[in-house]
Length: 479
Image (cartoon, rainbow, N blue to C red):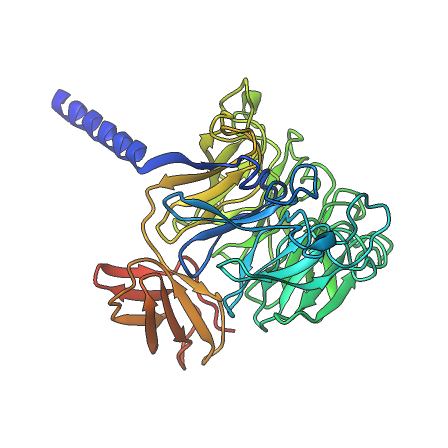
């Protein structure tokens, strides 16, 4: 029997060794002011050229702001960082300042985003820089065009990024402005903006001050959160049709979480998942799930462990990895108790949480952004502070997940144009949508162009390459 026990022990040690080898954390870059400073809420996005793009709220080349007016940067998966654009490069900062949200690459190839201040509009009480914020588009190479400047009445101070919907339009929120307390808007890729909803219309019971962006679910409706008011004063979850009909699904009140600062993600089980930055069983934030119809339940309450070693204060939203688990960050807590600089965690859809990394300030601190999964399988993100200059970092976390492909967009009807992103795509011999073959063209090793084939149904996109078959990270939705 001893040899059996010894064999079992060796097997456990081998598994543990494989797990430790599979999980690696690396700091890829440190912000120093000239190349950006303080990445706020915007998660990274992988573009069609294979690089990852993001924003910093401060830093950059402009001296018009005390700490710099913010940047757009790109970083290769291997870690080569470069500044794509420095805001307030134009007179009176008509190109905007302080980009806090994420970028999104639209089907036309441009990256779209928002700045919280600056632009051609005027907002009362802003000193020294005018402007209620902007919406811009930028080429991956760095040519920026402002497509809209907010003017209080149509919204002001957008803090979140945009989402491109099924119909091709871009949707987003402003933290303030409108008739009272923020707006939901849509804007065409060319720049025609329409205000869809003014928060405060329902006497504040409909929520106020949305800091997060929107997500379009498989049913075609858009979902989001507000940070404040609602019947209990602690924020709401809402849904809104692309035409602008808004419904409040849930109002937070403390035990179920308070003040959701980030947006939602729809998991493969059809449920929407999100975070609140406070509230819950310990008062330090929650992870929740909610059905598209509005039934909410708490999945996890942070600071459930002594000294909050499991993390606390999650500002960012979640991302579903290719393993089916949800990944995210907390701005405080972690196993480095003297620092409490935040964590990276994963949680199963059922609620089992594992801390993947605790920051110690040298490798970053206070991550307020979520994660992005590169098609190489690794997760990439930013920390708001810490690092070599205490201006934030860019990091990579590998947990042993393999290569996959992404589609842009993630849904479409038969005949719709689709870009498939990945690596090692040269020589691909097949592209299928849930088993239905599609006609395709290999652009380069990182991109394939195709169209949704007739007869395709909702499911994974598969690309067969000389190195093997690659599946998409999420189902491609065929409405």
